[in-house]
Length: 294
Image (cartoon, rainbow, N blue to C red; front, top):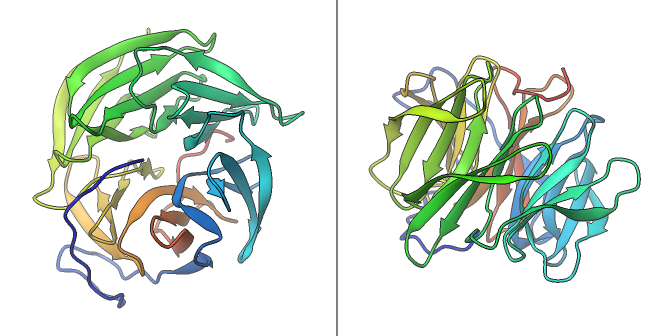
């Protein structure tokens, strides 16, 4: 993720917002500068381990095994830089490689990274969502032009341009019931929802929610269908209902959240990657997140 957005900052304090139904306490899971400022793409595998891009230097994937414990998992092929990460039901890892214009696949057994999908028309694959069937959807922004595209990648690696001429497509997620796809546009501050058809095509695009300020980044969904959206520059995670209502804002220590992932023992621990800090913050949500493994 490469972007410049006008920002303001406020200090962390546990607050109960006017539109909030509960209070959240955030804390550091991994402290400053363990990852680079390009820290992104958190995802949890079948064993419950957290994986995040750009451990110590760009072009790497780090493995977080416990609070305060991170190590190098793999170094990506030359010319590749990871952004979003997702796992399939077989525990294979998929990585949005924005500098190589690829979707990479890391085999669950031999940790070998290879190009799963490539299309020269891709601007910069940024974030990916995965269905339980293994079908991938990828956001593809052009930060310079404030535009974006949306792609579908089938299980055979074939790429299909779903939509072009969008805003700066970024966060992307499949609903808990696998019937809807959510895509946000960072600069335009809009979240769109599509109906996923049986053939994996998309129909009935409509606006879910629009924000008045700050940017949007990665997002995930819980088992009740609520979206947790990283508000880049505002230093919060916005919890939004499936109907598009802002339910609460979870205040973070840092100002620049880039992405979120569910994990932990009960599946309701949220990990937040923090640009500038090169850190990972965490808090516990009311409900577990959607998982490929159950």
